[in-house]
Length: 194
Image 1 (cartoon, rainbow, N blue to C red):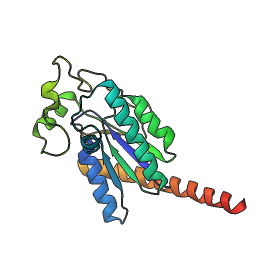
Image 2 (tube, rainbow, N blue to C red):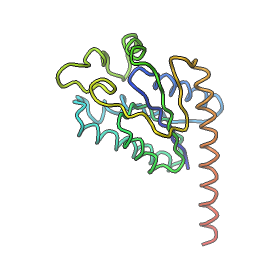
Image 3 (cartoon, rainbow, N blue to C red):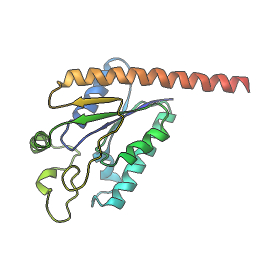
């Protein structure tokens, strides 16, 4: 049984940087992890995204289910997604026994600056440039971003260095790995007794 960590925060708060930093650090320790970057998945699921409520509901539910399937196959997962609605992250928590949420906090102004300087990748460009326009749905500006109520870890990315944040998430991953291993061992013992 694998585990999953959802790294959540506003666009530009550092989710992708941290997810890939943690994945690299885990790989150096011999642990293969799958990073589910929602912006990459969205390119396949909704190639021309509208970011409507209905579309977001489908995409985030599919993301939680993908993470569940991977963890059931024993694959550790890092979820890199804003997830502005707490309900989507809570769904993943219900689906995945060894789950943790990492809440990234960063002032909106810093997120805007980072987004403007972002190198091309899967994340859409000029997110904040579209904010405030009719029909815009930028989390934290046009639509609410619901901060986690009880995250396993909070990282202030504008104050905390990348290496320190990666180390904190690695510690969390080790704890989740032990939890997942213990649950798998209990399940094997139950099967052996039946």
